[in-house]
View 1 (cartoon, one colour):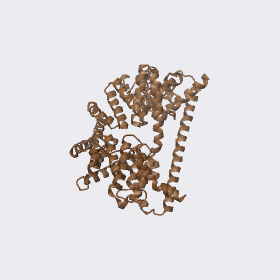
View 2 (cartoon, helix red, strand yellow):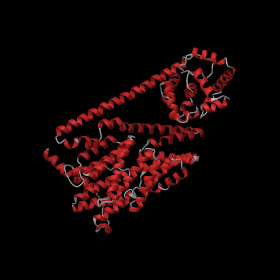
View 3 (tube, helix red, strand yellow):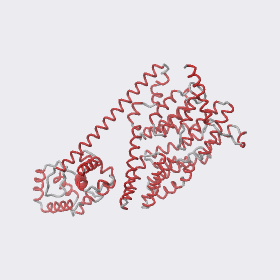
View 4 (cartoon, one colour):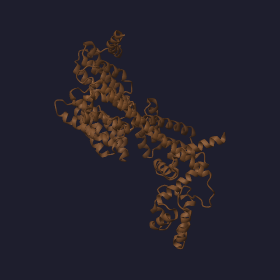
Length: 581
C-alpha cells in the first residue's frame, strides 16, 4: 500500500498537467517570443480581455512544461485559475493542481501563493469560511515574512470584512495596502497592476462607507493612473463605480452616462456578476427618472443574469419589489406571481449565504491577520500536536457559537409566531366598539381618557379640535403619506402645541406613536378581512398605508404587536386554508 500511495503522490501532479494543456499548441508567431513578452502580454489584457488572458496563461504553462521550468508551471496554473474565476468558470482544478505541485516545497512565492488563489476562488463563491481557512494557511506558509504577500493577504481579509459589512474595520486595511503599493510604485520593485488594484479597492470601500465624494476622488485618481501606466485592468470598474456613486449622489444623468459606457466591456469579458449589478443600477436610475417601463426592462435583465449564473446579491433585492408593484398596478397577476416566486427564491439563496457572513463567527474564529500580527501563534506552532490542539479549539468555539446563533434565531422566530397567534386571537375576541378605528393595541387606561376628555371639553376651543381629530380618524386621513404634527395642526386650524397636548392627554402617546398605531390597527383589520391584500408585498402594503418604506412599516408593526407582518399574514393564510378545508 505504501508503494501505491507513493506512486499516486508522484503521478498526481503530472495527471493534472497533462489534462490542463491537452490539445493546446503555441502559435508559430509566438513560439520564439521570450517569456517576458508573454507575461507582459498577459498583464496587459488581464480584466480587459479575459479570453486572451487565458490564452497567454496557457502559453506560460505550456512553455513551463516543455522547458521543465517550475516557476512557469506554477505561474501558469495560478494565472489560469484567476482567469477562470473572473469568467465565472471553475478554477478549482487548476488551483488544486498548483497546491499538489508546491506542497512541502519552498520556491519563490510558493506554496503561500497557491493557497491565496484557492481562497480567492472560495471567496467569490460566497464560501467565506473556507476562504479564511486558505488565507490562514497562506499566512502560515509566508516565507521569511514576505511583505508583498503579507500586505496582499491583508487586502484579501479586508475583502472578507467587506462581505460581512464590517466596512469601518476593512477601511484601514485597504488604506494600508494602498500606501504600501503607492510607496512601491516609485521604487525598482513597482507593480503597476497591484498599485491600480489598491486604488480601486480604496475607492470601493469608501463607497461602501457611503463617502461617495471620497470614493470618486480615488476613482478619478485610478482612471488617471490607468491612462498614465497604460494598464486598463481596473479602468472600466472604476468608471462603473463612479456611475453608482453618482446614483447615490442623486446626479442621475451623470450616473447613467458612466454606467452605460461600461456595458460592452463587461459583456466582452463575460463578467456576468458585475453585468447583473450594472443592469440593476441602470434600472434604478431609470426608475428614479420616472422611466418606469425602461427600468423594468433592466431589472428583468438583471434577474435573468442572476438566475443564469446563480448570483443573488442583496443589493439587487428591491428591484424585484419594484417589478412586482409594476405588474400589480398593471393587473398582470401571472407576472406578479412569477416575480414573487423569484423574490422568495432569491431571498432563500441570500439567507443561505448570510450564514457564512456572521460577524461573530469571524471574531470567534479569529482572523489569520490577528494571529500573525498580535499573537505570532502560526510561526510557533511547529509541532503537529499543537496545530491539532488549536484546530480543535477553533472548531469547538465555532461550533458553539454557531449553535448559539441558531438557538437565538429560533427563539426569535418562535416569539414572532407566538405574538402573531396572540394578535389574531385578540382580534377574534375583540368586542365591538362604538368608536371607529379605536387602537386595539393601546395600553392607555380608558378611565384616564374619560377624565382627560372631561378636563379638556370644558374649553369649547379644545372641544372643536377634538371633534376634528375624531373626523380625521373616521375619514382614515392617517393613511396619507408624510403626515407631521405641523401639517396636521394647520389642517385642523390649530397650533402644533395644542394638538400635541391634546393627543398626549387623549391618547396617552406622542404624535408619531398615535399615527403609527392608527395605521397598524387599520392594516391588521384589513389583512384579516381582505384576502387580496395578503398577496401584496410588504413594500406595497407599507406604501398603501402611508409609510415611507417597508422597513419603517415592519419596525412599527413589530414594536406595536411584538411580531412581524409577514408572520401575521402567514398565520391568517393558514387559518383561512384550514377553514376552507
